[in-house]
Length: 336
Ligand code: SF4
Image (cartoon, rainbow, N blue to C red):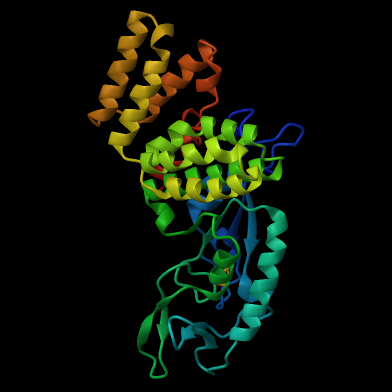
């Protein structure tokens, strides 16, 4: 386990039912991305950001489907063939069809993964086993027939449709990386909620703590979540929590824009107004305005609000997921 983990960057009483230990944030990963020599040619595809930065904060669950399915290293390279809607996994030179073997392995392995409570998965792009999107599918003549998913990645997503997944090259993009980490943490907290009793009260508390995070991404989803929480007393609260999870994860997928952040920051500042001196209030307004004009980063007004929430002991604000973002080292551009 890591000394400092992402799970420690969530509000203290957020998402972890009473009496349950805070769990580490576990993320599945294509094993070759960690620098392990499991590729068909005995090489690896080490990704520095994942190993050196994210790896210090999460617990990786490394998987190489081709090695675990028994193909060995080195091995003959494989590719997807045939119908892009239902591709076959075959060796390139000898044309051996390994679809059944890989599919059986994948179905068994994803069932085992359910016990590990993953909060995300980073897949290797373009791989016929691990690629999440756009993996080339060839016809018998060896020309491009279309694009699909790697077989293991496909099985994983079918079993865990809400778990955030990304490919390593997309995580080099600053905003996609930030979005992935937000979704991983959101999913991690929502899973903690559903592991507990998921009473209406617990769901309402979760909703309150995530209000501004959801609003920064998708006010439209927030409008849908409100009545769901309100009506939870009338139906099975666990069913409501499950439906809530679907909408919540959809909401976090929507891009958080500067305009939406500014609106949220102004709302939060408004909640602080009666607690601040005139100078503190003006300083906060200036920080929000500078962020709006692109002069400063989001971290500046957000940290200021978070600071005042703590100092002024405003519990509702202190517990906002929006004011407890992932550590900055994860989102700095110089790790791209
Ligand atoms: S892409 Fe997937 S199957 Fe290929 S070496 Fe990496 S982990 Fe193994």
